[in-house]
Length: 512
Image 1 (cartoon, rainbow, N blue to C red):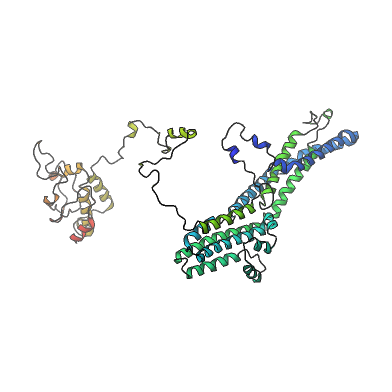
Image 2 (cartoon, rainbow, N blue to C red):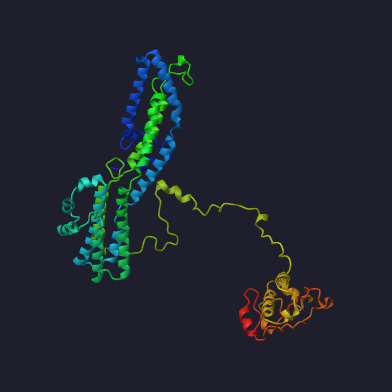
């Protein structure tokens, strides 16, 4: 059974993992204690032979061998090779769990698409889910030793109720040398099509949804089969295992304590137990044991997947969902917060402090700025009147020519665009208004002080001469004349207010 310790580490605290170090079941001690004792026994045997069995000449030769092994053992890239290998195995292990064929999504679709409270409708729903469960059992008994021990033959599957005897005959009469875990999925499709013909499935969209969910379930079964078939390449596993074993074989000799009287470098202390070498063996060999346990999670280790539990759970839950819970609804009634403007569930005394904490508004919610930093700044070139700025821009884009300015659709476009821009701001209106210099208290007759007045009552602009105006005739409040011709607006249509877009396209049609 899976070792679960999540509740023990729900809150991080001082020494939070210290209690986990004392667990035996599913621990690294249970996996590694034999290898650790073997390594320590061989080390102590070599140490005893060096101290009490070898002659002085043999001791000198053994000491040279120790120095040699200690020098070149670091050339074995144990951490590099082992780190990549364990990362690959852990990623593969988690993906295998995500590929477990669970029936929860499929049973919800069956409940919502296969209708009928009579015995026929009930038979359809239960049979569909039994086929799905049968496919899961067939694939799991192919990859999991625990499930195979539970269902060693097809007879056991029939006796357990996942398959009828008639279905067993059809299953065995199907000639195929490959794994036939997919056969119940085909039965599922045929039965769903029959339910559609009888009207139990009311439309093709519901049938499509049901079959799509079945394909998701079947693809997970197929992924488990492929994970069992395609293992981590054997060469990778061999390289990692040889690297770890050869490294610690060299450490058996290279980490021996030598006689301090001989004056060897880094051998001025003589101990009998290599504490840090044992720790290094514990870490590296333990890492290898982790990969060994996770590379096939369908065995019977402490932390392997509980496949038999998943089979029981899926079978029971799916039958409850499609049978007893079909069309089973509680009476609709108003909820507790029906009239509440801001619904909020209550808190217990242990969690009441959470009510005082403000809700998260965003990471920039508490940023403060000085008042002068919150003022909008004008961009360069916006101090000039908008009409003049647009005129300069158009002059730079278009060639200046009397003939071009007085005729053609391009001239009308430019004139309409200029007329539109003449109503952009109050400054431009005041600059072009003939009554801008009227004395205080006098009522202007052109209506330029209020853009909401009837703009249709204005006189159309007089057409300026085709030639350039003389500087003496240009008023001081007006910008220099542009080389474009201003086309007068029709008398029946007033200029658009400055807050609305000008209907240039419509005026263009009328001018044409």
